[in-house]
Length: 330
Image (cartoon, rainbow, N blue to C red; front, side, top):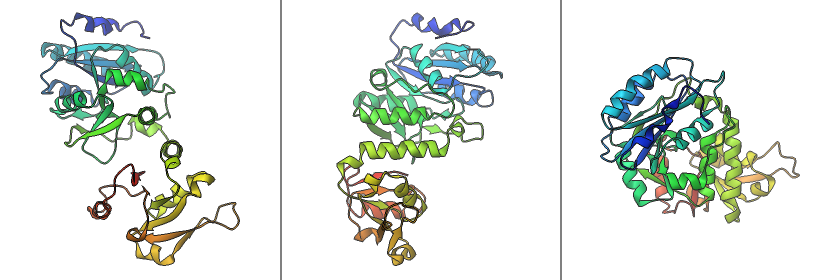
């Protein structure tokens, strides 16, 4: 669906050769960031054919003026630019905008980008090379989290998994897509370089999604996708996050928790965690053990890169296999 005033979506039909990579860029009131963002598209060192597919989601600022300025620069350099959008009174959301940008694009591979982020020059080249080798995976770059603007995948795989949820503000469309990707057997490959600068600011779309919404989706998916394969498991972290996960589980999943594990001597010395708010009688009391005394599989509720490598060293020392013996939840 495309509103009047955005006729350029047909521009990709002018291409003399098939487009290899489409950069998917939803835009809403992004004038503060667009120059840097679009400049990073121009600086890509990818030698194949590339297009930029922009969908303007009812921007009221000068975003379209900036886009038109960059359109000429990009096309002179050989990057096709496809522009769609609508000028309704209200934006329709990130999921809708991504779907529209994908629909109007033609590349065999999709490179996702947010309008407030900046790509490193090697991003498209390295992720395209990885995607050719792994056709049913999504690709991220070096970092502790899987964030949407680092993703890269084939159009065929996106069509198999997608589209994005179009519920609009407050819906974690990227998380829902990723869960569906895993349900359908998709993999995750990390190109071990920094490929994107992620800009975290008060106006970012991510702030429209409540943390409790994301938490609930993640817990339910953990119970659907992973926990049915385990008769019992240990929660790695006897602190706030580990206890929160335990309390968030359904009663059936809580029964599978045989212990918490930690390195904090005070928590271990206490010996157990009692779920005081439980309606069960007697109230559940779960042992707290040192991680070396605990039994896998583990659901790990420890954030990565926060302990100077100590947690990562401890985990590696157990010689466990991710997916079989442990899963990262945080």
